[in-house]
Image 1: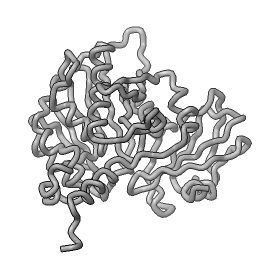
Image 2 (image 1 turned 45 degrees about the vertical axis):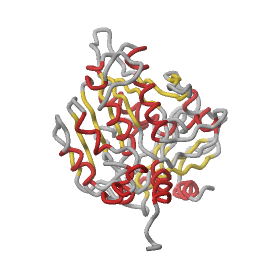
Image 3 (image 1 turned 135 degrees about the vertical axis):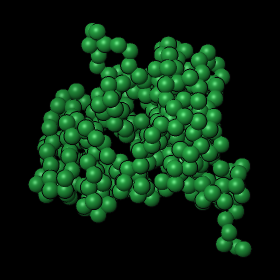
Image 4 (image 1 turned 30 degrees about the vertical axis):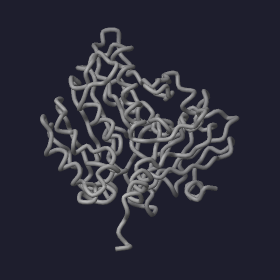
Length: 356
C-alpha cells in the first residue's frame, strides 16, 4: 500500500529522530565548554577530534579512590548543554564524571570538514573515551561505571558488551552499568518491534541484541509516564540482563522530568518538576560564561511556578543566556538578557521559547 513506509524513509526517519543535535553557534561553546578547566580532547580511530570533560569530585587528603562515571548523553543535547548536570553528579554522588561528546555534535560541527553524527561515530567516540580513561589515565575498569541516558544507552550497552580494539583493558570488567530511560533500539522506539525486523539493516543501537552480553551488574531506571521512550523498553531490557540490579520504575515521570533527588541545595543543577505553565518542565541557568559572579533571582510571577533559577559566574559586560528546556522532546531554547538585568520574568521565558 502507498501509505506503508519504505525502508529508505524509515532509515532516514530513524536517523533524524536519533541525532537531532543542537545547532548553537560557536560563540555559545566559547563561553561555556571551551572555558572549562577540565576540558580534554579525544581522538577517535579515524582521527576525529571530540571534546570531553573530566569532572573530579573534591577529595580530602585521606580520600580513597572513587568510582568514575563514563557518561553518554541523550539526544537533542550535547556536552555544552549538560555541564551543570555532570558537575551535580560529581558533587552529589562523590564520584568523578567523564562525559565525552559524539562525533558530529557541538564543536564537531565546526571541524574542517564538519563532522556528521552516526551510530558508528558514537561507537568511535565511546571507544576513544574508554581508551583515554583506562590506557592513558590508568583508571581500572573495576572503578568505572558506564552510564547512558536515552539514546546514550546505545553506545553504553555496546561498550559494556565487548572488548575495545587498541585497549589493554576490557569494558566487560567494569564495576557496573547504569541505564536511564534506555531504548531497545532506534527502530523499535520509532516504529515498534515488528518494523525493526522488517528494516533490520536500517535499525540503529540494537540494545536488545547486546544487553545480554554485559557481564557487569546493570541497573535500569525509567519513568512510567515516558512518552518518548516507552517504559516497556526498560522492562524488556531488564529481563535480558545477566546480572540485573534492582530496577527503579519512577511512577508518573516522563523522559525529561526525571527527579533529581538532593539537588535542592545545588542551584546550578536543580531540576525541579512542574506541571504548570503549559509544558515547561524546568528552567536551568546558562553555563558559566565568565569569571565574575552575579546572582539572578526569579520574579514573583515565576517564583510561584515552583521553579528554581540561578545564574552563576556571569560577567557584567556579557549578556546572560537563559536556557529553557521543554518537554516532551528535550527541546532547548535560549534568549539573551542585557548585562544590567538581574531578574528573569515570564516574558523572558516566552521570548526564549519563541526565539526572540
